[in-house]
Length: 246
Ligand SMILES: [Fe+2]
Ligand SMILES: [Fe+2]
Image 1 (cartoon, rainbow, N blue to C red):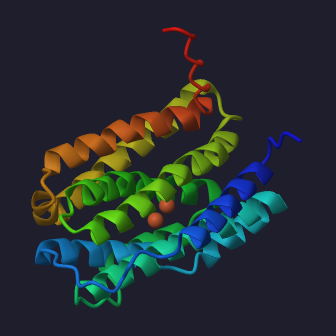
Image 2 (cartoon, rainbow, N blue to C red):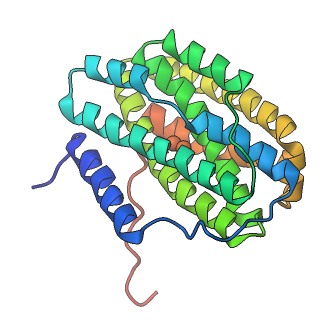
């Protein structure tokens, strides 16, 4: 049976959970040598990943679609797994986790005030920034444990973005096209501001990872264009199959 609703996303999240269980955790035993600026940066992202997701789950409940609610529950479990892995990575690097960070507290407070649609738009800002961040950490961390953890988280984030884009597209498609475009243009503007703030705050870590603030921000802006068009116009059609013999 072909599933076109959120049952397909539930299947995908569950398949991923089973794949994760079969793969097991990375080898946490060996000590990890990370530059202090990278540790400080990971500590802040660890706080951002950590949360019980109860407010989001309550709003997903209100959407009246049990399959969507279940997919959101599995999404939250993946985010909690990111926080867990980053905490273990910090332990391996001999560093503690932070109790909290003002930017995360402000972000959480803002999201609680919002309805599901606007909450997802705000959450998507964090998701798209995370894509660029974990890509930089995966490609730039000298230690295989750090780059391995970043690679695992990045693979999840790459699924989270189309998952939220689908729901946002459903939420926005009742609006006329110019209004949808205005919403996504505003979202891209906010995302560029958030990306710039993260680039400034994490600049020393990005440099230690072999990239620059400018390159990081360019990556955020590039990803935001793809996400915005998926929100406004729906998912891109699958790429055409390669022609035999070419
Ligand atoms: Fe995450
Ligand atoms: Fe995510």
